[in-house]
Image 1: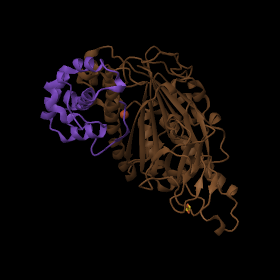
Image 2: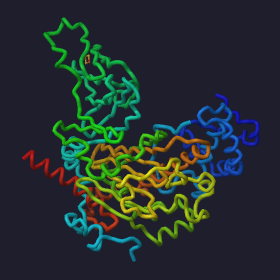
Image 3: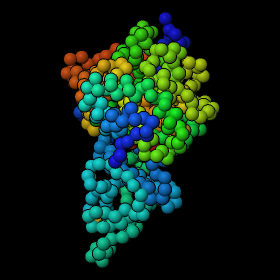
Image 4: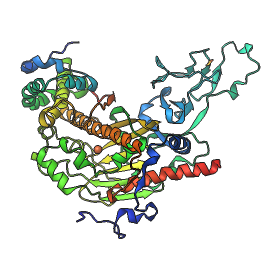
Length: 109
Length: 418
Ligand code: FES
Ligand SMILES: [Fe+2]
C-alpha cells in the first residue's frame, strides 16, 4: 500500500510511517517510539493541522482519494502521540502498568 | 460546603434508608463460591444487553456472543420476518458448536441463508427450525419439528438487544423500569459511527462498575491526564454529583461537565483546543434535539452527563454534546472479567469532526487503562482479606446499592434453592 501524502504535505512525507490504518497499530508504534521521535513528529505535524483540515475538507469525507486518506490517518497518529507529547512525557499513560485494551471496531472512514 | 443541593434527609445515602451507612463488606468480590451463586442468581436470570440492532442490518445477519458467565454461547440473528432471535449456539445432533470460524471460542459475525453444522451438516433456518438431516433415513424417526435450535428470550429496547436465559423472566420493558421509560426517544439510531474497545481485567466485575459509578476518584486517579493547573483545581474542588437516583436494581447519576467546551480554553491540551474535543467528547453538538425527560432529570444548567446502570452489567452514558458511551462487564471468573467500552457518535461531516471523535475515543481508552490497572491492585489486596469492610461516602452511594442488589439476588436464589 502506498503511504504517500498529497504534494502539499511533502514536508511531512518523512513521517509517513505514522500512516497507520488501525488504532492498534498507531498505539503500538507510539509505545515503540522514543519521546524524541514523537516530539519531532508532533512539532512538524501539529502546526500543519489546520492546513490538513482545510485540505481534507475539499473532499467528501467518505470518498477520500488515497493520498488524502493517508493524510487523515497520519493525523490520527498525531492525536495518539499528543498525549505523551503534551502531558505525560512518556509513551504510556501513567499508572497503567501492563494493562492493555484492544480496539475491536474502528471509527470510519 | 456542598456545591449542589442534597435531599432533605441530608445525604443521598440517607435518602435510601435501606442502604444504611455502615462500612461495606467486599468479600462478595473475592469469594469463588459467592461468584458461582452470582452466576446462577444474577447472570442466568436478568436481562443482559448483547449489542444493538444496527449489528443485524439485513435478513440473515448474525453475530455470536460468548457468555462464559452463563456457560454458553449465543447466536443472535435477524430472520426473514425481520425479527431478531437468540439461540443457544449448539447443534441438536450431538452438541457441536454451530456457528464459529477458525477458533471455536472466538466470537464471529456475518450474513447467511441458514446455519449448517460443521460436523455432520445438519441445517437450521434463520428462525431456528431444523430443515435438513444428513442421511435422515439412518435415524430412528427424528421429528425435525422437535429439534430446532434452543431459543433464548430476546427482546429489544430502543435498539438495544437484550437476552435472558430465564424463560420465566418478566418482560424486558418491565424489568428496565422507570429510567428506560425516561430515556425513550433518545436518537440512538442516528449515532451509527461506533468504535469499540475490549480488555481483560484482573478484577471482579463489580469493582469496575464501582470505578465508573463514582466520580470521586476522577480528580485524583486521573490527575496526570489534565494540564497541571487544571489538575490542581479539580483536586481542590473534589467531586459532587448533581443528582443520584435508584429504581429497583437500577441506578443513575447525573453529573456536571464543564469541559465541553471548557470555560477557560487554556486549561485544556493544545490538541483539544484545535480539535474541539476531549474526555467529555466533541464540544459541538452534531445534531440538536430535545432531551427526553429522564435525561438530565433535574434540568441543571451545568449538566454534562448522565450515567445509568441497568443491572447487572450494562452502563449507558449520555453526554451533553450528544454522544453515547456504553460499558459492559462480562465476568470470566470471580477475579477476572472482560470489559467492553463502545462510543457512539453521529457520523462525522468533515475531517475535524472525524479527528475530534478519534481524540475522544483515545482519551477514553487512556482513562480506562488507568482505571483497569488500579482495579487489579485493588483486587489483589481485597483477596488478602487483611481488611474486609470499607467505609463508603455519599458520592459512593451507587456502589452501596450495586453490592446490596447483587446480594439480594443471591439471597433470593439461595432461599428458593432451599
Ligand atoms: S453435531 Fe451438528 S450435525 Fe452432528
Ligand atoms: Fe476513572
